[in-house]
Image (cartoon, rainbow, N blue to C red; front, side):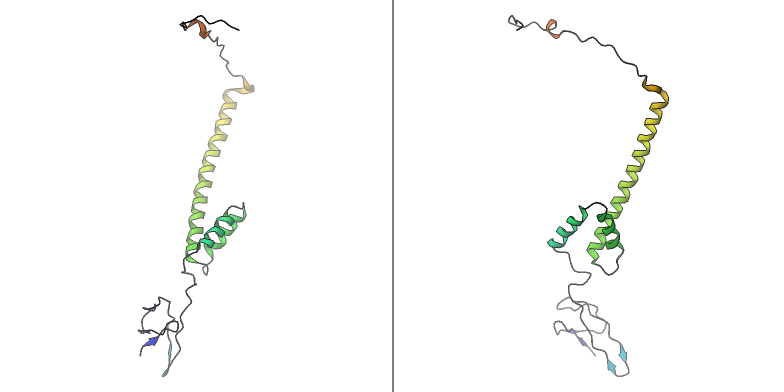
Length: 150
């Protein structure tokens, strides 16, 4: 016994997951005795729908707000009922955030250690200062004309 897609009316097979005509996801039918439950088509704006330009603009705006962006990343990344594209974007953002935190930690520890070593080998700011005499450059070059200082 074949089923029909409620959204477009196309005949679909018993084992089909998607409608071959409109592409909507079909719910499974459960047989109860001789009766078959009515199949339902899920709407196209479910968790697999692509994000629109407005959605990306909203995401970009939210990610510009400090602290809130990290909280929203965690909410979007681990909400199993949110849009798949938004979820993957948030997971990628969290990965980038983790990489940046790790690199900044490594660089911060390195800079801290460099300051400690600098203070250890040069206590009380006793640095060697070079005494340089800067030459008069006018003596180096012969000009083709007589230059007079004004």
